[in-house]
Image (cartoon, rainbow, N blue to C red; front, side, top):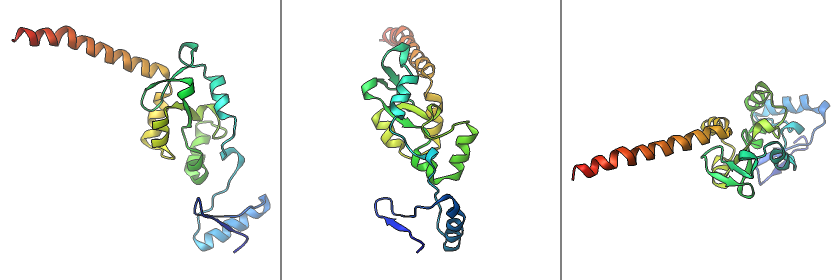
Length: 172
């Protein structure tokens, strides 16, 4: 079978191919109805993305505090998981996401524009999903968004205690 091996963990057939061999592999997969995933270096996770993220993102007010991009939870640096907004595995499998990365002018999956701070719960729940998670991550990666949300919440709570509680007590 053209030198393919089955990876039981990912449940995929894998073949190491050279650049001159790719067209032959494409034709073979097309004939057999297989999906071809070409594993290019720019779509692989590297070991330094977390360190690079913290070097380029100093945290809230220059301190070691970050907001989760998905839920807004305030996190200390040691509790932050650095998440790939467009998941590495999803980008490897989807030509659309590879095209989308190029449209956003993101060179590879480990680019700073594709990394966001997240709490462990949100990172685990997101997994390789996009859609609504992508929108939440794009908006939520800006600390100003979460600061304004918390200020509005504080104003709403204050207004409730200033105006609603006295009105309720006057009815008694």
